[in-house]
Image (cartoon, rainbow, N blue to C red; front, side):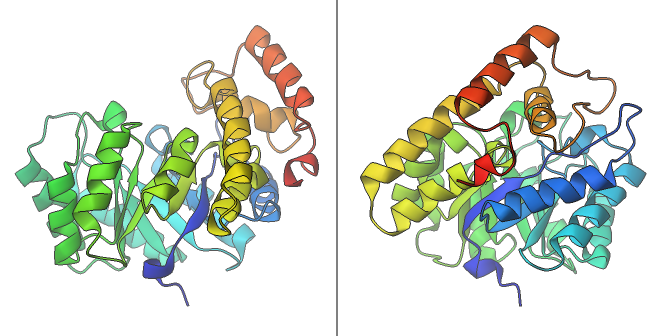
Length: 305
């Protein structure tokens, strides 16, 4: 039975495999899920930022989530990402995710218009009324233009409105502030979305990561978490160093085109991003191929070792 209060470790923010015409590649989803579960991850997020949720239509979002749930088959928890600028639309996404079998919803604040902290808190309070899934807040101000201030996160956590937060701001002081503000709620889950800061986040009491690079090398990310848990900081630092280099290598192009390109090079799915964005350009893909080959990541089996 899924208990969000026990959720921890490495969750992969899954890419959404697509065909060239923009339709969902269910077989690619299945291969990707097997790839990350084979790497030892503790859960997955469908339809996050790496999953291009804001660029997919409703039918495609449902197909992606359905394919992820079918492929995971209950082996790991499945979170569903929600990025809607309108309250009723966000509620509909959460309800659909619950009907399909997701375990929790990761919800971004409404974007487009500026939002006060009072408005942000009100949005989540209204979402939580009768919500069929536990809610987590997704702090990603570079996409939403809204910062969920630590005091707001803590207030919603103390009220039981949200059960956790994923912070993708890349602002470690912010992450520390959220940890401090919620430290008296041990069941509240604080995840970093910044793969490069996983070890530091764990040291501050974070629950783990919900990350994009885990699509490519899931075992690399799991190694950091496992080494930290057993107290082997030297091994954890070495693994974090390797992951840092990988993360920088997949920042080329329009996000997440480099992640899609890497998965294509690994034989997992096609390289296409949701229209109107295009695939990674040939020069960047050639550089990425060389780097992945150097690191032994050009086969799915290699990424599990």
